[in-house]
Image (tube, rainbow, N blue to C red; front, side, top):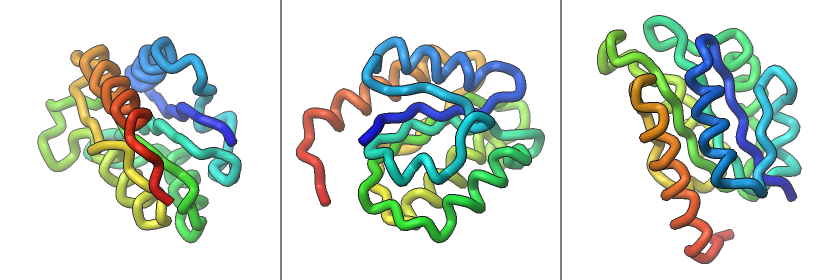
Length: 146
């Protein structure tokens, strides 16, 4: 089984976020959504997903495709954390909405949350990475359910 960090980015914020997380999680493989598909989740036991929120709370076309692939995929073997950087200037409803969309989608497919979804302003990317790493470390100390 694999441990993945998947990211999507338009302006580089979630790329940076994924890099910062990967620096503290060398056992995890990091790649962009453009280089994989949801089928990779079948061979994955741990996932950190860093999705990009576009404009007023939309998924990018690439993320929409990934989202539709995830729907209907049974994922009871998967533990996950969704973390994303966005722009607070878009307002609370649109802010990092992709994080919430993917958190719900993975949960609905039977995957187990490693922690609460993390949404941070793009100016606080390093803080979001620290929060994610802390949640991942806590989850490693807890017994796996399943």
